[in-house]
Length: 106
Image 1 (cartoon, rainbow, N blue to C red):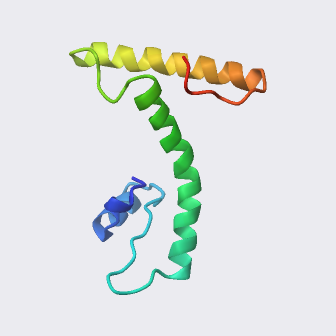
Image 2 (spheres, rainbow, N blue to C red):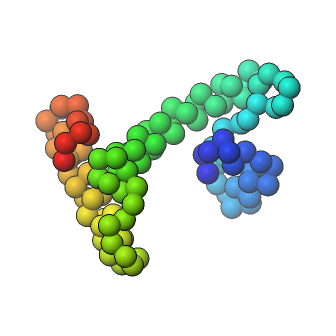
């Protein structure tokens, strides 16, 4: 849970109960400016979140995973696994060759 829309005391206490790190960005209080520490905290969270969101963007836009092309959990799971393998092979090859990752082509 790292979405600012999930910023609530209930969600924060649930994460604490489960022993998970609270990485939820803080919202600005209504009618008040956001505190310096919450602004700094949100920037630090955004740096980590960007890496994850970029990967999801690639899966949705480049590999077409915004919708499944198959019906059924098993076939959909297989589709995601195969596209994940393709993504990781391409990424690994680009890292090996020291070239920037070009997400436009498969």
